[in-house]
Length: 181
Image (cartoon, rainbow, N blue to C red):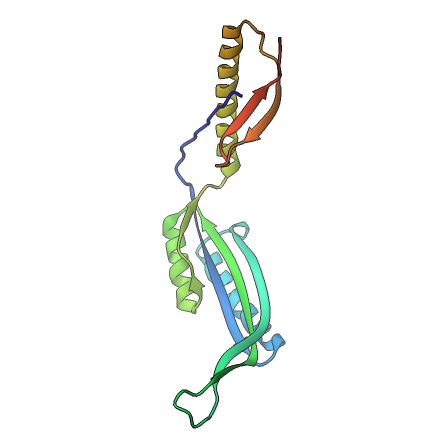
């Protein structure tokens, strides 16, 4: 079994964050409408900063019953609590990315000013697959060279690759040569 490892080092070229609109109301429709209004306000602020529509993606939209703890009115030292439905809550989760950390920073400021929950910044790659493919090709070339050396030392001719197994980290690939006597 010849093993190859491909490693590619790259500087992240995209910063992204996730924000959540969360609105409560007495009915599902009212919660949905309130969330949509707040979401539209957020989208307008992002577009005003120059963030492209293609860099803004809604990744979740939920309207659920809103349950809250209610303390029962009793005469004990520790009043029991119960949970009861108190209207509905609508949540809209959206990711936004930018190749400018300054623009994303301004976007986070705008979103928090509107009253939205914003997660931290994640640095990533706009075309991650390009780097994965480059690492894969390096791993395959390294494993082929190793298998070729072994075959030559043993006096065999190297056969064609019959399988490639992805290593556990997602970046390494292990080609296996067919038995060629």
